[in-house]
Image (cartoon, rainbow, N blue to C red; front, side, top):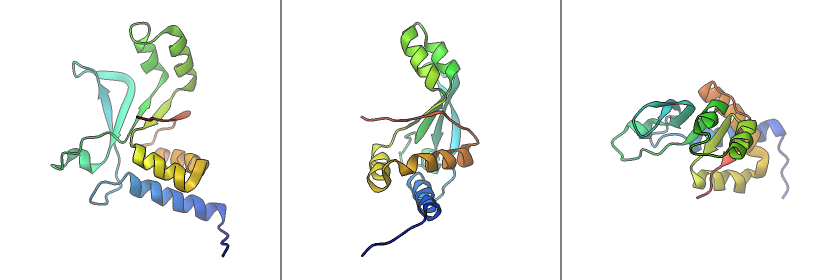
Length: 140
């Protein structure tokens, strides 16, 4: 049997799937922005980590969901941590978002192919109030 689904309905399904995938264990879909900290506990310029309620619970889960980094972040790494060539490459892609959960990435790619990526961008903007140029899929 063949089913037809409109693009807007598919995007709506993907949007809900993304929201549930990044929700905390209790189902809360709120996302929180935290400044990324260096080894001394100082805030890093133009770098943020994002978490859900599980980060603050007693469940022992303290993983970040995703991170956002801007051009100034990469500039601050040059030349001590990255080369000028790496800086130029990353700065041209900034701001970047890195998704850390490979299981969520596998599900998104498996269920929706590349169709989820523009929907994630919309969801990310709605949840965080921030935008990005490049989406990185971290693979471990």
